[in-house]
Length: 58
Image (tube, rainbow, N blue to C red; front, side):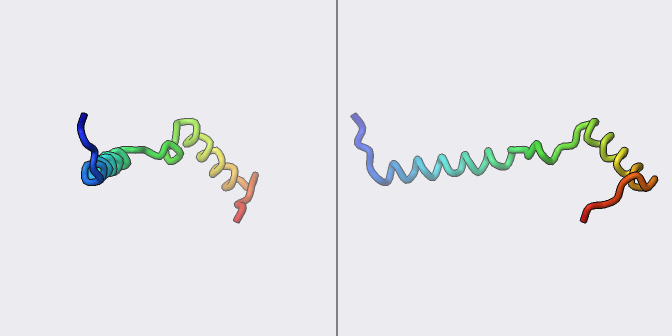
């Protein structure tokens, strides 16, 4: 059986942290993606604002 030292544990942790960093680079925030329906709703809201059917909430 292999003896596990703190040095081996630290190297494994460093490797895992590098992998996590690489994974984070490729994660997409799905809340920032607009669907066709979202875009359509925004356009409708802008038209309502222009026509005076609604007003901006600040």
